[in-house]
Length: 260
Image 1: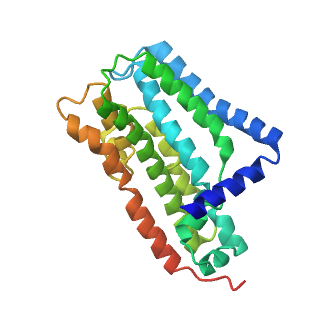
Image 2: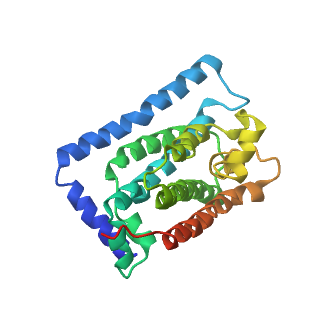
């Protein structure tokens, strides 16, 4: 992890060399999800509720998934931009270094301007929590933290799967955005508003349901006696990262050098 922190510090200093650009990009990232949230707000202004879910309950769901996405996009950006390393032949240099390829690729790119998106999500999170009557306990507070952490693991895992495909396709495939950007847009609402096959897919295959829906039922007191199960779902969702890491290692073993 010492190497990772060095990558973090070096890239942060390099981005702060152009501070005006950095702050303008951060402000832009603040307003990008704001437009989406405005659409959510006006939707509830018109219809009042969606399948029993009130505005601030869905706003909490929105804040959690966007917070997880912004953290993953900031700290796992190296995998999202991995195709550039393959195209330029820079991955060959990573392979000859006596350090983990996972850490080196993870530390190859950071997007600190995503702090703007993170700030917007934090504001929505605080606003929604202040307007919800939740009987808070230390376990519920921990569950909320685990929801965000699990979301980071899931989004990072999807980035890694998309990066692994580059070993065979060279160029990253846009189909991965169906599960990344599309998953983010879908998971900003509780899963039970969708058809059953969608709910099952995004619970048992791409486990966004373990981030935004099942533990949210526990926090809001809607779990119908399944408190322990729903409380632990973020931990189970984080396990999605393990097969993604294994698939990444398989891809690394099958990589053929460019000869550069």
